[in-house]
Length: 420
Image (cartoon, rainbow, N blue to C red):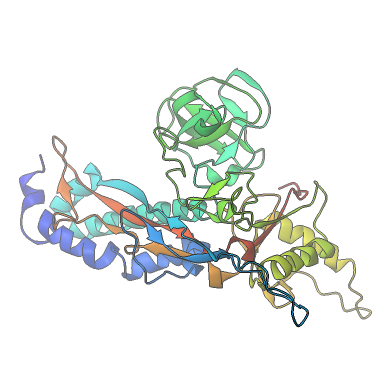
C-alpha cells in the first residue's frame, strides 16, 4: 500500500499525479514531442493519415491492373475483347504497443520529505521511459513486422556471450527469445526469456544473464542465422507479426513474405517493392542511379527520402572524396549535409546495415488512433499497484505503417558494410 504521506493532498495524491502526467507526459506535451523528435527521428518524419484504423484495419482501394484491350487498328477491324478492371483492396491492420512503467519506491519515499526531489525523480524516470518507448517504435519503423532484432553470427555451444548481426538494437536489461527460424517457416524457440547482461558495440557481442541487471551468466547453445527477438514477440503471433509493418516489409520483393496487407504478390506481381542486390560489394554511384531508375521506370515515382545507417554514408563519402579535386592549400575535411541529387542523405542508427533505402513519402503513411499516449480508458493514467508502495501506468499505441504503392520505393541491399 502507498503510505499515508504519499496519499496526502497536493502532488502526493494519485489523482493529482494523474493530472500532472496528462499535462506533462502525454501526447502533445513538450516532453513527448522532444522524445519523439530526438529518439524517433524517422518515425516522426512519416506523415500521419487522417484515416483512423478500426479493429478491421484500414482498407484502401487500388487499381492493380486495368483494361489493356485498346490499340491501333484498321478501319473495319473488330475491337479486341474488353479486359476487366482489376481493383484490389489491401488492408492495413492495426498493431498494439504497450509499455508499462512504475514509479519507484525511492521516488515515493522522497515525496514525503522533499517534493522537489520527487518532482526531479519523476521527470527523470518519465523522460527515460518515453525515450525507450519511442526508440523501440523507431526500430520497428525499419523492421519486417516479425520482430527480428538481429541474427546470430557463428555457432555457439553453452556460452553466455554471442555475436550478433546488428548490435544497435540491443540494450542492457532487455529480455529476449531466440528462434531457429520464424514460426511460419516451422521455426521453434531455442532460448526463452534471457536478459541482456552487457552489450559490446565494438565487437557486436551481447552477454546473457538471469536478471535484468547483473545476475549470473546464462549459457546458450545457438547456431548461425538464428533470429533474436524481444520476449514473447513470436508467441502466438498473427500472420503479419506483432510489430509494425516497417520499411523493410513495405519495400520487399517477396523474400520476407509473399503476402503484404492481405494481398498476395504471387497473384499480384505488381505488388512488390524494388530491390537492387549489390552482391556484397561497396556502394557506387551506379547503384544509386540504378535504384532511382527502378523506382522511376517501374513505379513511376521519384523518391525524395534517402536513408541508411552510418556505414553506407561513410562508404559513399570516402568514395566521392577521391573524385574531388581541390585548389592547392585548400583541402576541406568533413561534411555537414550530404546530398545525392536533390535528396538529403539521412542517417538513422536503427536502419539495417548493408543497405540503402529510397522511399517516396507521398505513398507512405502511418495510420494511428493517436500518438503514443498514457492509457486512460478508465479515466485514470496512474494506478496504485496492489501490494506495492508504488504507482504505475502504461504507454499505449494503436496503429501501423502502410503503403498503397509498393513499387514506388526501392532498397539497395547486400552492400559491403565497413567496420565500425
